[in-house]
Image (cartoon, rainbow, N blue to C red):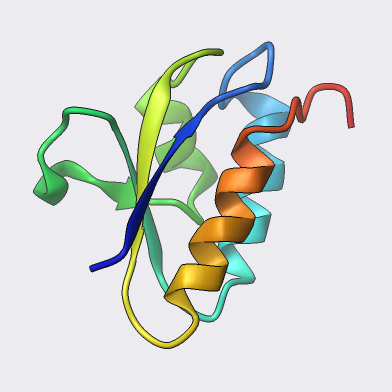
Length: 92
């Protein structure tokens, strides 16, 4: 299963506006994407398209998260989502 790591760049982490923007982008992908804090077991990963899951994750600025997806288009989806996470979404 393809995976990527990303460092959260938003000053508020994955809370409120950044979480909403990221969840929307994840939901638009052609594959299901999961997210977890780096070091967490794969089976504890959460739905990246769920704003509630993202806020529950508690990722702060500078935290490293792992994104995973499987299926046709997974590589491109992960690349796009990593780019989004590594952008300060509070400034958008």
